[in-house]
Structures are given as structure tokens and as C-alpha cells.
Image (cartoon, rainbow, N blue to C red):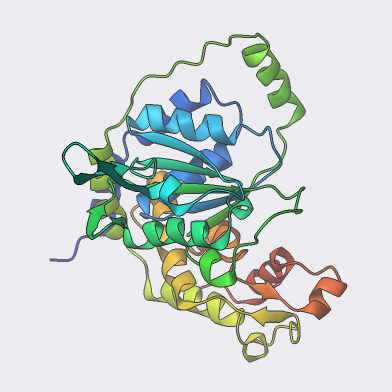
Length: 329
């Protein structure tokens, strides 16, 4: 029996009763950054991962650590460096000379919320080890495969300022991230509030647990049931196709796009739109949900051409033109 949107909305509001208290609890410690907190929640609700770009000092680590405390989950922070090895992430086998046996020492990746600081500073084999764990939700140590805990969210950060000594993520690996968030500076009023809250050598930053991991997992099933009209589904497909064949939609973008978004972007877009509707307490997705989350889903999946770079046309501007040029259902 098909549920009505009113029934789904009632389920969403019941399953998402923890959303507002969680955001309020995080806001006690993290001033501003509602956009970042919402992006992390969308990552948890879609069982995806988040790539974060922002200058140092914008409370990225504090936000993830606070969220882990509020959701009552594990938290690991990994500082990526050029000399990091895959075993430093996933763990290794340790030989015991007394027993003559190998024992498994699990790495810091065996946690729920993983902050991968400056992921582009680690060499390709370390990036691959992390991204394999993200995709498969498991790692292999020796001859044994170990499942990773659920929920499992990787928040990987990139510093847009310093690019020397970095290993940029290839396009195929960027595509593994559900969202890419661009974090800016706080407003003047927010920065004044940060000064009051953090302006001591030992600020008290304590939060109370609001939700259990089981509640997040249960909320995912409700997110998956949120209604998406066929016209909205067609709109999502059109948005992604417009990144590949803009001329088909009469968009003046010829020669500006080197690679368009993959089908994984289509899936990520509908999942993220559903999660966005869930956070707003609705049992249905609107075209505006797709527009609101579209930049975060597509900005790292649309590769601009050299001609576009020469004209200072970024993927952001291309996505703007696509949303402005496509008819909204």
C-alpha cells in the first residue's frame, strides 16, 4: 500500500525529532557553521562522505568532534602527511615472538566519524586505502576482511591556500564523495560571539548526547521513503545530463566542460535532496531542494576545460548557468 505524502511527513517528523535539538546543542559550542553541520547530517543520512574545502581555523575539527559527542559515536582525527602509510590508517599484523602468532592491531579508521585532515597531502596509495574503505565499508588486514562500524562518515579536508607538496585527488576519487562543501569565514557578529565563547585559554566546551547511532540508521530508512515526483526525477536527470551535453538543453556552455557528472552524481543528488527534505521536516522533495543541494553535489564532479579556466569560469558558475537555464517542473 502506497503511503500519502502526509503520512510520510508524519513519519519524517517523528523520526527526525532529534534534528532541532541536535543542531541547538552543536550551536552551543560551534558558532555559525549551520551549513557545515547540515552537510555533515546529510552525509550521515545518505550513508555518504563529505569533502570540505576551507582555510585553517574555521572550526572544522571542532564541529566534527562536537557532532560525534552529540550523536554518541566514535571520533578519529587523521593528519595526512607525505610519509603516511596505509597501515597507519587501517592497521597491521603484529608478530608475537612468544606465541609465534600474528595479532591484528586495528587502525584509527575503525571509528564512526573520521576527520581526514588535508587528504591531498598523503600519497596516492594512502588515499586509495581510505577511499576503498569509504566505498566498501570494510578493510582487509592480512587475509581477513573486517567490516567498519555503522554509521561511518569520512570528512576529508583540503586547504585551498597551500598547494605545494600536495597530491591532488583524481577525478575518479573525488566522485566517491557525496558532497563537497566550501566553508567561508563567519560573519562579524558570529566572530564577536566566537570571541566571547572562546576568548580564554581553557574554554568549557561540553555538550550532551542527543541521539544514538541506531536513531541515525533508522532515520535513513525514512529518508529513503520520502516521495519524489516523476517530474522532479526527470529534473534531476536533466541537471546531470546538462553537465555532459549542454547543447541538448540550449545552454551556451560548449567547450567549457571537459567532463560532466557521472551517474553516481544522479544518485547522490536524489539522496541528498531527500535528506534535505528530511531535515526540513517534509515527506516530499521539491525542485528547490534539488537546487539548494545541487552545488554541493556537483561542484567537484564537473571538470571545466582549459578555455573555461582561461576565462575564469569555474564549475560553480557552470552549475549556476545550468540551474538558471533549465525549466523547473
